[in-house]
Length: 341
Image 1 (cartoon, rainbow, N blue to C red):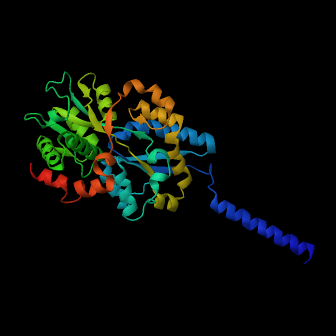
Image 2: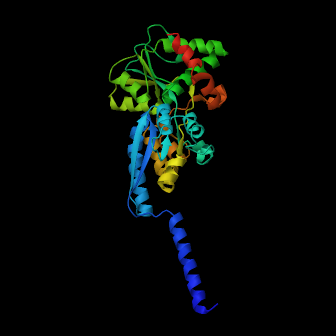
C-alpha cells in the first residue's frame, strides 16, 4: 500500500472515531437543557431552592444552562402520570413503591434503581408528626388521641398520596406494637379514619384544608410540612411528636426511558447526585428534611430534628411490595376500612 493511500486510510479512521465520539459523549455548552422533575406534594419549596443551586453548579461545571421544571401532586398520582406518558426526566417521589410501579408498569426505570444512589436512593428522610391548633385545645399527644370521639383528623388519601400512605402505615404500626395483632390494628385504624371528614388527593391539599380552610383538630403531616406551617402561619399551630412513628425514606430516580430518548441522562444523573452533595444536603436540612448522608448537615440542623423512636416499613409490614398488596390494592385493607365509614 502506498504511503499516500495509507495516510488516507488512517485519516478516514480518525474521522470516523471522532464522529463516533461526538455521537456518544454529551456535548455540554451548546444550548440549554431542560429537565422535568415529577415530585410529590410538599417538596415545592425544597426544589425551588435546590433547582437554583444545581443550575449554578451545572453552569460552572459545563458552561451549559439547565432549566428544571417541576410537577407536584400526590405521589401515587404522580407515578401514574409518568406511566401514562408524562415525560419526566427524574422522579422524586414520596415512597419506594411508587418508583417500583414505574419499573413494573412499562419499564420506565430499571428494576435496580435503588442501588444506583446512596442510602437506597433516598437523599433525605422524614417522618409523620401531628399538627394541632395553637395551645392544643383537644390535648392531642399520641396516636390514641386520634380515635377519640369528637377529634376531627385531617390526612390525605393513601390511594393517591405518599404522605397519606405513610400516615396510614404509621398509625397501623403504632397499633400493631400496642395491641399485638392485625385485627386490633385494623379496628384502630378504622376508628381513626372514621374521624377523617375529607381525604384530599395529596399532602399539600390536606395542609390547605387544615390551615387555610380551618377544618379538623389535628393534621397527620410530613415533618417538613408541619414545620413550614408553624413557620408560615405565625404561631397558629403547634407540632406534636408522637413517641412512636415511622421512618419515611422519600426516594429519587432517573426515568431511564425518557432520559435516554431525550438525551438528558448525563444531566439528570448529576442532578440527583447533587442532592447528596454538601450543598444539596444543607438545602434539605434548611427545608426541614433530615439529611441522609452529610454529617455536617446533620449536625447543623440537629436542634430542629428531635431524636425519635422510629420503625421501618420492613420492621412491621415486610417491605413495600407486601404492604402495597395487603393494604392499598383494590379491595385491600384500606378499602375495607374506608367502606366502614
